[in-house]
Image 1 (cartoon, rainbow, N blue to C red):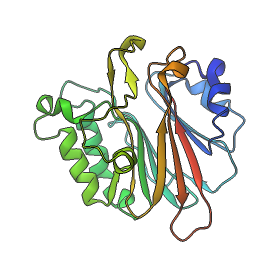
Image 2 (cartoon, rainbow, N blue to C red):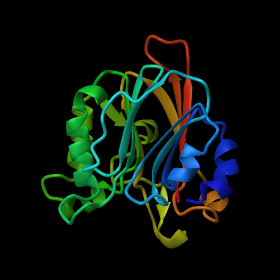
Image 3 (cartoon, helix red, strand yellow):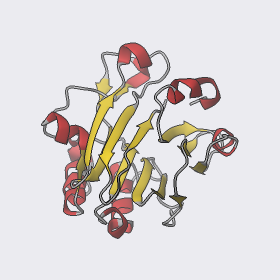
Image 4 (cartoon, rainbow, N blue to C red):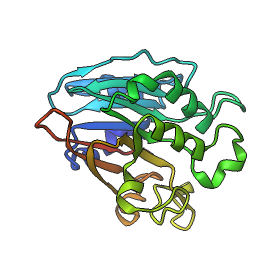
Length: 230
């Protein structure tokens, strides 16, 4: 992602928490922020999280390196999993990996204060390619844990029929897909917007998701998170 050259674009969004895919370990470890975490097998291209504002950050769950790549952590009691659904083998790839992550951390996500967000690399339109562990089944699984996609909740559209794209293959504005999501506990009020391609496509093939959580249950605080990537 070359965060060192693009960080000012992210910071202009004034996020509390940033989830970054394809980011170097050095960019995360060297950041002067209250919190940072990174996971990956290539030090130049992994999954990173930055906590930009003071808060109670805790690495509350153990992330298995056998499930690339995810980072479970909590922020002021909100149980989060940052995600970059990657490919390990032909069988363990993308949405299939995310199924395993959701199963492994089901209690954590199903706490009533759960959020899993990032690059899922999946959509209902590709269900046929993942029999038994497809995107629609993942949506159902997360719903049983009390989570739904904030975008689909807000826009009232079915999965697979999104009119706003989050990813443009090779930065081609005519070749877009919706593959980035924020699944949040249904009891939590939130809104989301997707970065405009006219503004962001020159910088990244993924558009940032800007998630605003208006009220944490049992808390007077609000939170904003952004998920830019390349």
